[in-house]
Length: 416
Image 1 (cartoon, rainbow, N blue to C red):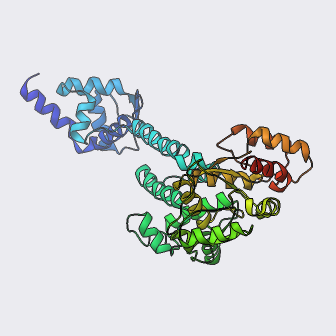
Image 2: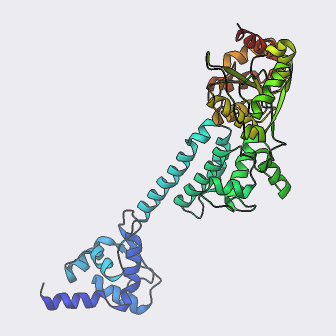
């Protein structure tokens, strides 16, 4: 092909009347899917004449013509020696791959949701799996996997830090989120996301008012004050002259429970546990178990902590303090949906391990009390996946008080 012929061919391809053709071909080839035919239109008469000249037709095509891509390929190659792909890249721009881009975006989306479902915080507290599913149902933040992952990372960071340390919300946010004091302000996307997680965790309705939102934050230890957040203990005989040690020791020596404030737990002063042997501290969900233990053992009661339902900031901080001082922690709670969620939460937040909370323990308890109330919404127990299946099969809750004799026998064994 001579230089003059090439120039003529280029001039033909660049005719303004062929622009609809090249834009349509560019769009089809950018789909990322196989293309065998090209459909155009509607074309005006000048555009139909230009197409007829290009393809070497002996008559005008229809206003909405359809023809094989191979026919166009042959005509373009004959005129310029180039391919159709090379031609539309030159005349319109680089070709895309929309199908490939969709596949890439789908992989990124799937990656975000798989990461969320498998996150340590979600796996440790299976009740949050429902929250993770609701996040997926809502979809990506602004259609962006990166923005979504960043926001979820912040939410998971907040959830991992709860219960908080009796801080105002802006102080808590600044500490946990790299100085962003207003990241959890009412109405922010992150605040809404975290509150939805807390509502799922506590099995309550999503907050509908400012008062509801404040109540959820308070339940999670944010804006708790140092005095109203308390934890009840019995049988705790620490050495040391710190306020916490002295209060706990005086009450234990009198065979009484001690109600320890968050202020005392946050600033324990000198607080020493026996080291030989390493102390075992048991924890329970219900105050009635602590009351029974004190009634039975009096001043000889083994160390026992009561969370009084969902562990607040004082409960978690005390259990962490005890573990830091060398104690081995064991926890028991109700065999119902909320009891399982409380146990998962506490085991995730502290070094405590389950105490008579296996599927075998549940089945033995049901055999003794087979006609209890329903267990409510059930989620997995990370320490024993068979437990939730057993509770689903029996459909019966077993409250802690019904196995109090077994728990007290275990405490008695620790005294030998």
